[in-house]
Image (cartoon, rainbow, N blue to C red; front, side, top):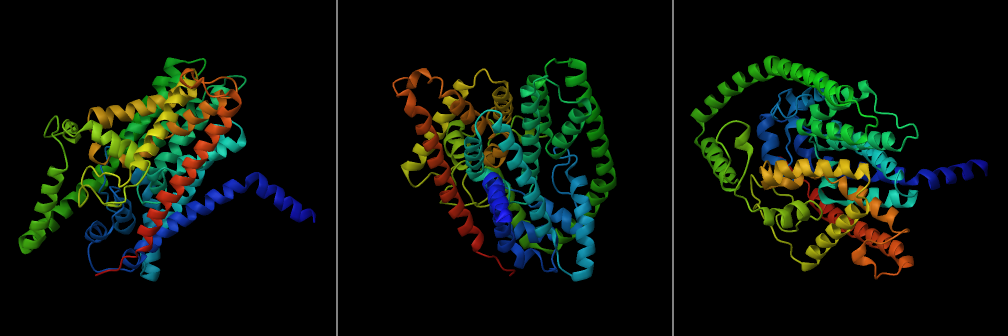
Length: 464
């Protein structure tokens, strides 16, 4: 009886963690199921050809698969200077397993990484929200966050986004601890250095978010110790890692690939046509850049910002489109796809309305300032400069932490007072009504996005 009551108390207290872990496991198992017949048996074709031909989960890249299968790095090293170093131990393990079993374990290995990173992200987000709201609301808002379409996808696809989410949520959690500490202890110098190295190493622009978190969270703030030295030290480490990988991996790899490509293109007219079609489609789905070469070649100044905001930034990011489901803009998806029902535009508008109310309610909260600064940075990169604007939704995890934090500020404010535009609502009804609205949104998003993802993944692919 004592053991049973202990188990019941544990489930009652920590059951949401177990449920979250189960859901994360199921999502990653679905992805493994969809592609296991193609990617796990040892095939007699090049890994790049294999993964590029068959893998399609929206605009997410499959380069991590390739790295674990043959050790080659195809992602932009300048934007992800430490990602290869993170993946290489798994590549060595997978290489040994392939020698023993003739089976490629890249798919389940990356799924394992996602499970750990996603569960840690859930834990950090929940603990961060507990600084603002009660336990039930923190659980609700964390579940709401993971119900967003491209958060749900990010924790199951073999890309860097799940690791980025874990590191950003950890940064936010450390900031919340610093802000709510009775002694106002700053984030230690060594922790700041390691956090910047890890976060910027996985995705370079996210390093700036560690800097803004330091700026708003540290009290008292030492400019040299907290804002300059960690980033000088971290920058030096990342530069060294980049140079080492470039000289030892990228340069020899590029020479070898160039020889292979020249030989293939000479023999295969079909391959030349396929490359030409891909380049043409890429050109059609990309707007005009500020420059033809260099970093500015990644920009886009002509793609419609309004359509991007409605259909992609606040549309596809939150609710999947049923038409062209999880297709890739650089292959077979139009840049803009409309929803079939006006209801989904209403839901999109309601999510944004709650966000604006939450921002107003938490306008004096430094934790919210951190999230707003992250959102502003991403909007400058994507909506102003146009970097990655044709598939802006895949970057959702980089800024969407703003939503649960803003919603938490709104729920924390409601027992005391209402934002002025809604002062006509009875004070006693405001908190339950808002909480119930968020609950309905969460249930809807899990049902709608989850059913589409499950349907897509249950359609198993086979090698042809």
